[in-house]
Amino acid sequence: MDWLGPAEWQAIALSLKVAFWATLVSLPFGIAVAHLLARRAFPGKALVNGLVHLPLILPPVVTGYLLLITFGVRGPVGGLLQPLGIVFAFRWTGAALAAAVMGFPLMVRAIRLSFEAVDPKLEEAASTLGASRFWVFLTVTLPLILPGVLAGAVLAFAKALGEFGATITFVSNIPGQTQTLASAIYTFLQVPGGEGPALRLVAVSVVLAMGALLASELLARRVQKRVGGA
Image (cartoon, rainbow, N blue to C red; front, top):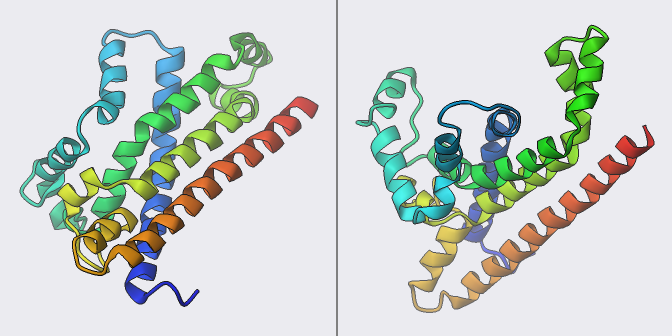
């Protein structure tokens, strides 16, 4: 694939790295929040649901700015993490954080729908046999919601691959450090003769996104068949 230059490969590799870690780290939180919204009634539930979905409604630049003032080195959270050696602003870790925040609503929604599709009587039956809540979740609930978990993870991964507004606001556009696929495309379009590299990266983005969605469908179908045959 000599038609891709070093800068383009660098952007692709960084995007995959950012999307992978954004999805992996946010997945346990996504499952927990989806379970909370699907199975629990508590004061302020509508507010929590609104906060979870807020990144879908806010302009991405606003989300990125909020991340910057919160997790920047002078922010309330970033200032506490800096002495521990954890820095997000203008680092690839910040790009992963921004991508995770932007993809989180899609992940939670898919997993929540799976939770709501599970009959609570199945979990109650397992509990009456003496199984703990954790064991019921691990052996009964999780296998049943696994297609939704996979779908949510892939949606978040695909969203992370294409994230631009929040990322460039939070971590800027530094080649080799924070320049992802989307920001690299933007950069190429700003310089004369950059249409060719930009078009190549657009093609790669489409292939990666479609590949992720197709893989999600195939995995979900296989899991459903195994669960149905169990």
